[in-house]
Every structure is written in C-alpha cells, then in structure tokens.
Length: 499
Image (cartoon, helix red, strand yellow):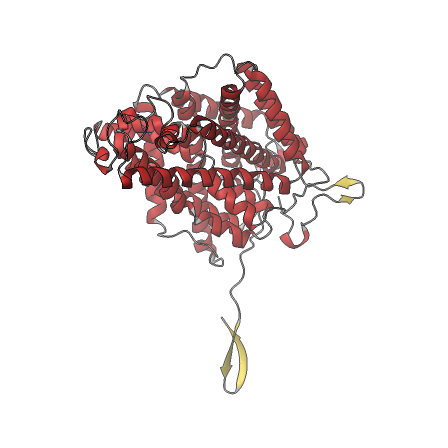
C-alpha cells in the first residue's frame, strides 16, 4: 500500500469528500524520542528480572547482558536502517511484509501485539502490587482499572501527550538509576558497611569471592539469557516512532546509537555495583537490591523512594505497551491484516480504536489479577522472550532481504547503514536462534516454546481463513533515501553533470 509522502502527511486527519484520511500526526520531537530510547531499557526486567538473572548466572550475568546487548544493538541498527529508508507506521510489521512476504508481515505484527499484551498485563498487575505497598486496604483491581482509564485517556489525546508522559517517566527513571549507581559506588569506594553492618563488607572482591565469576558454570550463563533478553524487550518501539517522528532521519539514528550506552549504564554498571555491595547469592533474597543501596546510604525512606521509582517504571512500560501495540495494529489494518476500524484516526491523529483495544486487553488484568501468583515471573518472562526474539529475528531477516534487494537492483545506498554487514547480521540471527533453543532446554522456561508454537500455528490458521485481497500482497513502501548529489564536473571548459 503506497504511503503518503512525508512532505504532505503532516496533518493528522483531513476530510476529503466526507472521508477521514488515516494519517498519523508527526508529533514526536528529538527530546521525546531520545528519552523514550533511554527509558525503554529500564523497567520490570531491570528492577525484578535482574535478581532472577543473577541467581541463575552469578557475576557472569554481566557477560550475559553485554552479549545480549551487543545482539540487540545489531537488531536496532538493522531496524534503524529500514526505518530511515521507510519511516512508516507499522514499522517492522510492514518491513516484513514488504521484503519477506505478506504472511511474514502478518505473523510479525501480531506476534509483537501478543508480546505487548503479555507484558502489559504483567505490568498493570505489578503496578497494583506497588500501590498496595502504600494503600494495603484498597483492592488491587481498583488500581488496575484506574491506571488503564488514565493512560488510555492520555493516549487518546495526541501522540505529543504520549511523548511528554514518556519523557517525564523516563527522566525520573534515568535519574533514579544514576543515583543508585552513584550511591552504590560511594559505598564501595569509601568502604563503609552497607545496611545494618551485619553482612559481608562491600568491595569488588564480592564479584569473585563467592564461587568465582561463573559460580553456576557455563550452564548458568546460558540459563540467564531467557531473563536477560526479556529485559531488552520493547526496545524495538523506537522503530515504531519513525512514522510519527518530526524528523526520522535525524532522531532515529540518534536514538538507536544510544543502545550500547544504555546497556553499559543501566545494566552492566548497575548490576556490577550491586554485586560489589552484596554477595550475588544474597541479592533478591532479603528484599529489593535497590532498597539495599538506599538503606546502605542511611536513607530511612528507602522503600518509599524505590516504590515511587518502580511505579514510574511501570507507568512508563504500560504507556509504551499501549503506544507500540496500537501503532502496529494501525499498520496491520493498512495492510489488510487487521480490521479496517484499527486504521481510523481521531482528529488529533491518534488511531483511537487500537488504544481502545489495548485497554480492553489490559482489563483482562483486572480479572486475572487475583489469580496470578507472584512466583510466575520466569514463566511470563520466558513467554515474552519467545515473542520478543521472534520479532527480532523477523527484523533481521527483513533487513537481510532489503540489503540483497538494494544490491540486486542497484538502489541508492542507505543513509544509516548497519555496520559489519553481513557478518554481524548472520551472527546475530544465530544468537537469537540459540536463545530460542535455550528456552526449550531448561524446564522452567520450556512452556514458552509450547505457547509460542501454539501461537504461530493459530496465526497460520487465521491468515489462511480470514486474510483476503490486499492482505495477500506485499506492502508497498516509499523509499525516502536521498539520491546521491549530482556534482558538476568541468570538461573542456564546459560544465557537465557527473555522479
């Protein structure tokens, strides 16, 4: 389906002969997307998943985050190259349809929606638990319903409102993480005892004094990848913003190139400080490790400070889940892979039906809240990891197909090319395949393959039964790559155009 050129698609929705155009508003500026890029790395995967990953791998979890982060960076560079070339709503769902075929686009888009639905239900449940810390007498479902209505209403206003919310949520999270790192580093550097002084003295020696860097062996390192990759899930939302970015060719590369810094700062450095403060086998066993940092600094309100931070992280995650899944559904409707009603936008340029649908999905959290035990994090994380890694593999495969087409047809070179092509892309695909195999090897994550396999089979049946007409055709995307400039060349006293 031909996309409207960027120069004329600024209006959010315009009536032509009584018909409202389905055009999104480009209302996200550099500040919005930059902080969305920063904040997307801080969420449930860091505040809760990190403790689970540490228990599996010990200090070697730092290596797992570095390896996983490097792979995610290559995914984001591949997505960034495609997003700059085709800055459209629907992002990687439409890229898969364009370069791999309509069924691939259908599977990629709906699997991302599935991923966001699982994570969002977990996030709204976590939010209700956090609020219960301050208001234990209030039923949890009340908080879930309230936050669904609030964030749903905010997302219906305009994409700029979403951007502002995410900016402030991300700013709070980033400041909190930096404060935790600085506070923990101060404890290690000055050598005073953390907490009540009854534990092991803080210091870098804690990284090797309790079983070495690999206390659970190489197997522990592999087991940690199920949780580590879950922590990075949702980072691909940056690619979805391309369709609503005021200047995608500028802001998308800037956001993507911050991935290594985010991995090193938010995960490697943070967890390195944590495991220097406390033996790795004690982290998560006596309350949150982040509370332990504040407590070690002598801050009596540590639990309340952390609770405010994790509430902000949950709000940010839910906000992004609604935005990301909604925009992918919008793109699916444009391709004929979802009901046409999902392609309608409000006068503010918001695909309102997709926001309403995500709100409906989150209402499941109200019903399931009392039924979900608190020890199912690894199960939820593993299912979400399968969906996330599947989407990443499709992004990489779409990128490979695009690069081959560029070479085959002699198209203009990309303005934001993925580095180390093609070796890095091949290695990253192999790594993602390894992660999926790891899910099946370990008993506590094996169910993710069963759920994932059933989901893919369901999508195959749905595609064969319900997708017709234009939905069986590849997406048609405008290539917005700037042509190489024509350079004047002097020849025999006359000026001619040369390339």
